[in-house]
Image (cartoon, rainbow, N blue to C red; front, side, top):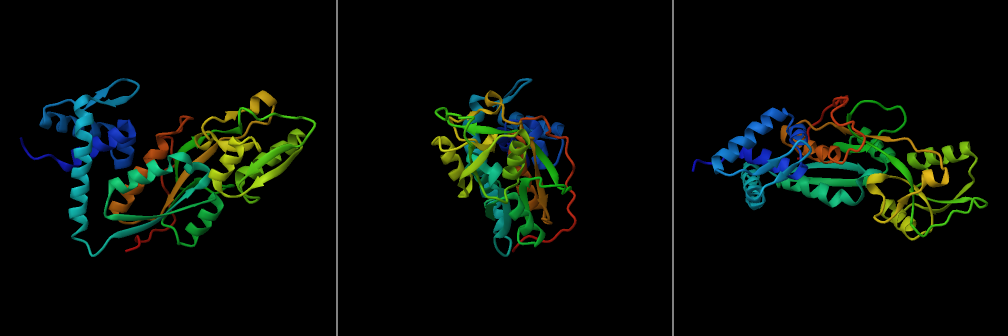
Length: 302
């Protein structure tokens, strides 16, 4: 058997992880057709079908499941060998909004690490507002945030639906103020939600503030309060109760990437992270993107 082409193996791993040729192509900044050719070339080289393709999804075949771990090991060994030629590990500082990270954060970080073992990612979780301020001060190389106010630019990754979430045991008493949980008084989601409640004439009071989305989610799951949250970060077992109780609909939120990374390897790693956010896009914005339009570029931290 001839030697395997690393680029083809890499394309296969991305399709397997992201479950889509289109998303893998976006991560590699190439076309879906080019990714298909690479995967087909790999399958021909191995003599086995690795992926079962249907009009709606892509799944690993039995041979594909057996090959996936060795494929990842090959990519990791290749990247480690290349990284060994450089002066040291590459470091980047990445910010991800607490409102959109959710329970998928460990998987997102694992994908980033698996893509390039020679890349050390310093990850910051905070509000979109705080992360954008850090990005503007050039203390973060890239941020994935909710689009705040009228700020434009960046790359549109997804459009996240928001709703009012509560535990199944929660009870609404219209004669009492609605009990709310929120991140902080400066939180953009909190401010939009409370303005809509005021406009609808629904009294409210905050009974839980701060602690991050994990803490807010715990307060909601315990039945302590209701919280305006993205569907993707709502705790398992909670319910969207807005329509049932006539609460004002919450607008969807744009999830955008801002990046000033200059070197190709680090930019490709961020593309893999961005593709993971696209993969959970619910509202069909994928691909309808404002292309990345940073106002400046600077080298990553060495």
